[in-house]
Every structure is written in structure tokens, then in C-alpha cells.
Image 1: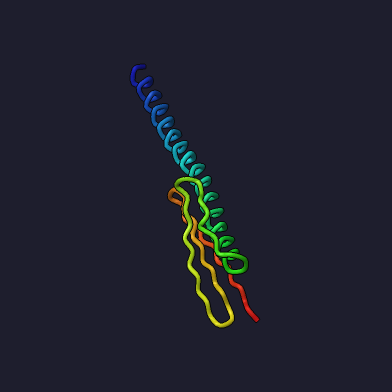
Image 2: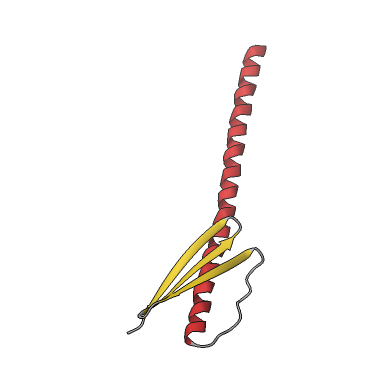
Length: 103
């Protein structure tokens, strides 16, 4: 009888430990999804900022939410203008690229 209780208790403890670990992974994934969205919007902000500077006016770099940044790289040839933008938020990095062709 005692052996049966110990075995059932062990099975319940093992099951609850595994479920707790899976829950931690789910929560971490949900948090990473939020960071991913922030990073993609930061990269989009970088593309829009560089495009505005190219076609309208040279303005200062926009400020984003703390912990969220972007970097841009511009490559120019005789017929194209390529903007690469990388957004960073937490552990998420997302990159976008825009190419303008001049005729």
C-alpha cells in the first residue's frame, strides 16, 4: 500500500514538473513574440526614416521605446538606392530591405 502511494506520488510529481517546464517555454515564447513585433516595427521605422531623408528632408533619428533600436545601412549605385534596416528588441533581431530604382 505504501509502495503504491509512493509510486503514484512520484508519477504526479514528475507529470507536474514536466507541465511546469512546458509552461515556462510557452511564456518565454509569448514574450519573444512581443519582442519580435517590436523589432519588426523598429526596422520599418528605419526604412521610413531613411526614405524620408532621401526624398523630403534630412531629419534627426526618431526615438523608440526603451530597449528597442534600429540601425540602417545605405548602398547607392548609379541606378539603385538600397536601404537595409535592422530592428532590435530584447533578444529579437528583424531586418528589412528596400530598393529604389532610378530611371
